[in-house]
Length: 297
Image 1 (tube, rainbow, N blue to C red):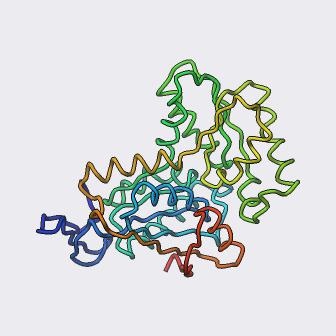
Image 2 (spheres, one colour; image 1 turned 90 degrees about the vertical axis):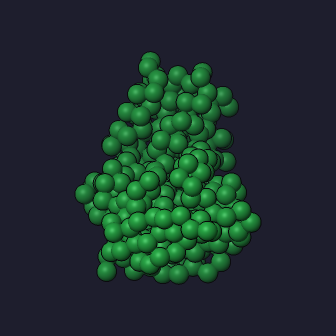
């Protein structure tokens, strides 16, 4: 396993001990009890956090939502990579043992750079989402809704095509959905009409699977089920990402000690009651205290 620059790992009586320098955690401590770091452009990545908490309740978690600069999907690839780098540096400052890029757009554009620059484990959400979409061998016509940045990267399209030949893959940019969700317009008529407009071309192409390639979109599942034909399978990557994370932590001997009561520290770059309510909806429980994060310093 690789770690941040100037880091080394040694086995201690109670687990692994990580000694880090400039880009890492900053001091010597037992890494298994260190938190996992998650980031997203908003609070949508909390769908992944919720799945991880259910599967790995002993893990401590630090979450960063860059709500001051959302959505990432409308930004250039260069800007997305810059934002992602700042997000990772913030999380490393809180001593995380691994990074989960809980944002499809950032995964599509920044994951290779982050893995090259930082030597802590960095996981994204695209591979787990693709695996979930292809879990049904009958899947032949796959629709993808995502931000413009994710669709334009072709990351999902390439990953699907590499794993199964003969697929019909249809990507549909849905740039208005994240702002509508962040406005908490989950049952609003405007959201319904926008969603219907995005879905119509996919339904006309006869999709049998719809991949929700944005961590915000699970909040729209009730509306999606109303608007889609009943035989279209909905897939989101949160649960699959959590399982993939469990396998990786186990392989790297980084699972938190059994019996630990996992904690959640939640940071947003812009605070508002609206985001607190959304965080509650994504987590399906109170998010507790939310603190403001300053990035780029």
